[in-house]
Image (cartoon, rainbow, N blue to C red):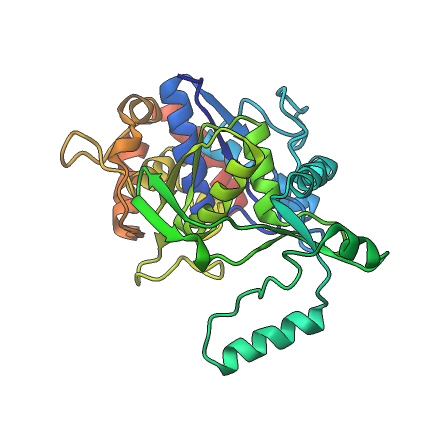
Length: 348
């Protein structure tokens, strides 16, 4: 069996969200339990929204929670480490584009010369006919002579979706399947030459030899496209585990506007990182010891297994979090408690 390699790939476009922290923690626990490698990769290709300060905030959040990484980029005062870099997606553009060219050369992708206006009109016709908007495949079968005749006309690169069906045996969601005819030929490189997320994430996971892709279930629909790309590129297919999302106390997706969506809000409120780690794991994982809720970090590593992950979304419970925080505070020595409390008193 290949050594376990897992990753967390946050986008530095804002604060470190509580849902991202849960995903990072599950990956980290699995790596530490199995003696595997935990990789931090920054998906910073959104140039308009990505900022260095947000990368530093992610680093600060991970450090506060005690989630250390084995491979990752240079940031937060630390040098890059690992043999599969660079670990910033923006620095891997040529790698992504090279793999896109290979897909075109091997017939698994093609150049699409359709303009935005043509595609918008196509979408409007589909909406008027109450059909799901799908690319017509107009450029799918252009001959090499027809492509050459286009000259310098701008084009995107589309993946050529094969016939058949795609099945994923997900460790959390179970077996999920889709008919490939439900997936249109999706763009993998934009007309400006920028790789699209679907291509970049698959190339990075493939070349970094990720064995398990553990992420939020909002990516489950993306996973079908990713499996198709993994197969076309000839990479070894990782095992997928799509985790349920973190819900707020009303049962809705934890909005970024809510206090506590930012992991560091809990630090400001006086919660211990051990508490947040303990609580986040319980939002989607059930220990073998029935009814047990209190764990130290070391005990979590020893008890953790992917098989105990559930598919139901975890609803935030502030009272339980407060109770856990009290339990973890009671574990502190007087000296540890003093060192935790004094900075809060000074700030106040």
